[in-house]
Structures are given as C-alpha cells and as structure tokens.
Image 1 (cartoon, each protein chain N blue to C red):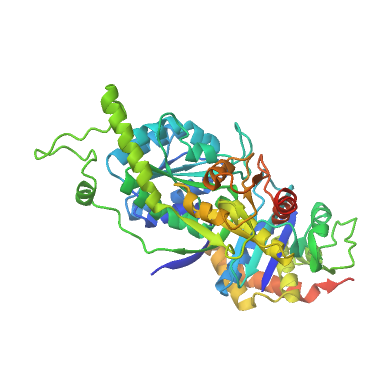
Image 2: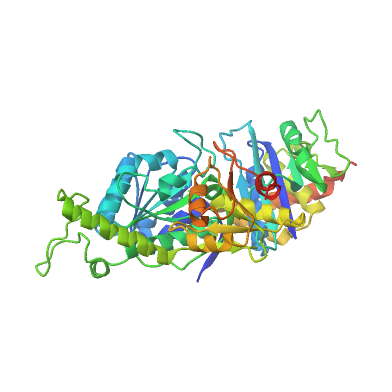
Length: 181
Length: 360
C-alpha cells in the first residue's frame, strides 16, 4: 500500500500542519512516511502545499508529479492539481469560495464544507481538522487512535487541551463529506 | 535505546550532532538550512552536554571558529547553503592545508550568485574538486534521506578525524526540508580533554614538557617542504578511496543505468519503477561518497549496460566523474532541472527515453 497525497490551499489554512499530523500519525501506526513542503517565499494569504506519502514499503521519491489523492482548498490549488490526480484517484475540496469546480469524470470528487462548519462552530482553527476527518472517512489508512497520538506529538504541550476539539472536528468532517460525482 | 522520530533533514543533522558528541556548532542562518541552528538553539545542548552552539556574525567568522576548534582536536561543525559555503572556501582550503578535521554540511540551493532558495545540486564541482585554492580534496558524503542526514554526522566526524581533513555533507533543499522517519542513535558522550590529547597528539591542546610544540598552519615558504607536504596530502586523498560508498538499486538485470545522488537518486528511484512498468530494464547507481567517487563499481556496471543517464539538478557536473569512470565505453548523457526547479520522476523518465533508450 502506498498513498501519495497533495494538500494545497492558502497559507494560514493549516495545510502544512494537516500534512504533518497525518504523517506523524502514519509513522505512529508503523508506516513509512514522507512530508515535503513547498518552502518558497509563501506567506499568509499566498498558496502553500505539501506532499505527504504513506506507505508500508520503502518510499522512493518525496517529489511527485501525480497523486492518489488531492486535497485542494482554494481555487488556484484546484486549477493547479486537478490534472495531476491519477485516474481513479480522489479529489477533496471545500466549495466555499470556489467558482470553477473540478470537472474530471475519471476520478472521485468529494466536497467537505469545512469553512462553513468551522464558522458555525465559531472556531476557524479547526478548519483543517474537519478536512482531515473527511479524508480519513474516504481513506481510512490511519486509524483515529493513531491520529490522536499524532496530534499529541505534533502539537506543543501547551496546546494539548485542544486535542478533544480537534478530534471532534475530525468526526464532523467524517460526517459531512459527500461524493458529488 | 535508539529512538524513532519524524524529523526534517535539517533537524536530523542538528539532533545527530548532539548525539555524536559534537563539541561545537558555529553557523549563520541561510535558507534552506536555517532549521539546523534554530533546532540547536531550541534544544540548548550547552545545558546538557556542554556543546557550544553559536550564531556567528558571518559565515567567515563561523568557518574560522571551526578552524580554531578543529585545531584543538574538538568535534566541530557548521552548516550553510551555497552562497554561504562559497564565503567559507578560503578557510576550508586553509583547513585542508593545515589538516584540520571538521564537518561542514551544504544544503544546496540554486545558484549562481544569490540565486534562489529552492533546491539544487549545482555545487558538485565546488564540493568534490576543491572549491577553494590549492591541491586538496574534501571527503564528501551525499545523503539521500533524512536517515542518512543523521547517520552521516557521526560518520562524517569519524572520517574527519581518521584523515585529519574537512568532511562535507553535500545535501540539498529537498533532503534538508523533507520530513521522514529517522532512527536516532544513543547519545555518545563528548570526549574528555584527556581523550582528545590521547587521540589527537597533533592538536593544540597545550604544550607539556614531554613533547615538542604542535604547530597548526597551512603556510610553509620552503618549496621542498611544501611539496613534500602536498605529496603527503595526496597519499591521504588516495587512501580515502578505502572508504568509498555506493548503493546499487535494481542493477542486476539492468540494460540501462541512471547515476544520481542525493534527492535526484530518490526521484530517479521512482523513475525506475515507472520505467520497469513499461518494460525498460533500468537500474540506479547511487554514489554515496562523491569524493572518493565509486569509480570501480561504476566501471563494472557500465560493462553490462547500453547507456547511462546522469541525473543531477545542475547543468551537468556529476557527469564528468561518470564519464571518467566509464572511459567512453558506453554513451553517457546528462539530464537535470536547474535554478531551483526540481525534476519530477516523470520528467526523468522522459529524458531517459529521449536521450538514452530510444537512441542506444
């Protein structure tokens, strides 16, 4: 099993940390993992992406040109990565603010309305965990027990009281993700 | 007990330094390797092992602190990225001349000049062919994973002291920034002053009545003595060949060969899977030491293949050593993105077909 994922969105949406939590959790579960960020001069409001690979084999290239799954959280990221998904792969996006929706019919397309849910909950900072929950519902490669361990390791101890809220956000994501094609 | 962690390549170098019993780190921040200094400052090893961590006022200052520490027999290191490493070249040449052990990691970014902060492999010549002035070589290690970033710190110190010579870890922005699983060794204690005096009888550890002064210098104005010194250095650079390292990946039945190190080796590994899915029998030869270059093994492999693609994020530097090793027995071509652009496994596959498989 090898799962190659691109996560992309605006800087500040929690793209890098979502990838890091997924990679840490995968490692806790005993998988080989790779996390490679775009480390260019990105800043808040600019675009940001990270390639995450989870595998039970030795991981070859941390740099990829096609993906099993794309989690794309803004318009530029949809435009950039929609055509980089392997046929039969998965695209997950939040329709909030999207004017040109993904078009491909040889992949599975899912919507997760994470921005609306996070806004309803009055806590935009759980946005990325709602998205991660949606992803984990579709691809349950890493179990929730290990996600909790991953959260513990990724978050500084002073933020550990936020773990229940993050786990709850993951549950919300699992409930609201829906296939649209 | 060894420990498994998810770490960035740069963080792994820093943690490995603490665990390898490093006495001092001297650096100056530059992307894409600033996490080394950041990590060390956060970890505060000076409170635990007494290891000095110092942000110097410039790369020049940092590398000359290495000169001082290394001359005293201490395990000292610095890290930087391409423009910073260029600034250090004078002192690196001096250390090679004065036979001072030290460890230098270059997390290469695109050049020339200030270039870009994105990954590149265009410092191969600088690392393997001297870099500074005069006849000298560095022992050069090319990690292609976070695990090797960690492992090569301890190995680097061992080689530096074995040969009394600067050792370079030649990495790049991909390997510096990627996070992977890494198994960390149990910490090795820093050597005591008594141990240093015993292991480094040449070091400037303070003259005692029972021995002559130890003089560390790269200057000798007598051409006869200087010639003898350079010839001794040559012998040492030849002896380094005993510690040559490489990795063969799927080469047993290979009809074509990719030669690549560092991140390009990782990218090319994926290319090999893609190519083999299409029925192209290609293998990967990965030099792990770039100096000494694993020329004998590459020469042996060249006898079984129809063509070789040298893959490096440069205009073609590694290819010169590849060609020297295979003596024009088979065609050798270069492929690589430059200026901070990173080639993808698919792009390497296309180049392999266009430049090698479709022609030979």
